[in-house]
Length: 112
Image (cartoon, rainbow, N blue to C red):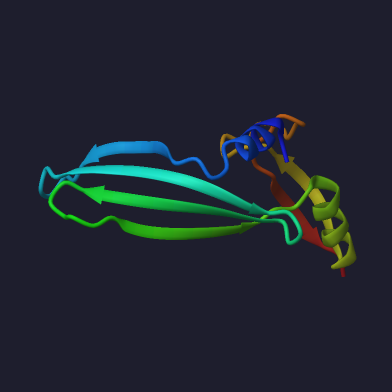
């Protein structure tokens, strides 16, 4: 995980504004907030999203779970399962993976 990830750890449990937008169909305002949790023993990152619609008294709630892999751990798992890393990117703009990257996007080949 990157330094940004560790900064996120400091914000765990605090609810923060994610976005405010208008529904295209109705013009209704939607406020989205989130908080995060991390289970270090299982390396599970949980994002809780809360949606407040201006026309509804109650919030809608979604949970999103992500398994986190440290870079060397991911590469070891790939090697163990007969994959070789061909390329590695740090974001969806296909920029090179660095220690500051927030994402790990790996292009692999299967070894026969």
